[in-house]
Length: 79
Ligand SMILES: [Zn+2]
Image 1: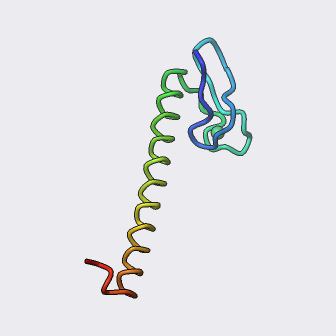
Image 2 (image 1 turned 60 degrees about the vertical axis):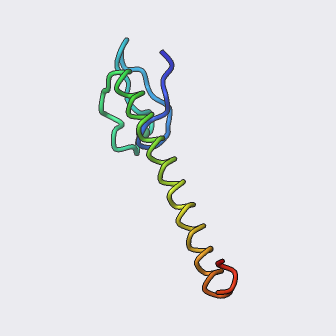
């Protein structure tokens, strides 16, 4: 099974046993936590999806903000 990067810090996973992994990064909060491979990958998936979603929301908000500023400055353009 291919392992995804650490869900917390993005570092490589360290294989502890046949089915358990932990993070290699000594500064990572989950470095000593042994996790089942399946769970590790699910967490990594969920977190990267959350990050992607957050980026899209921030971008959307910035676009709406800019549109509002343009409309405030040029009221005639809105229709
Ligand atoms: Zn980590």
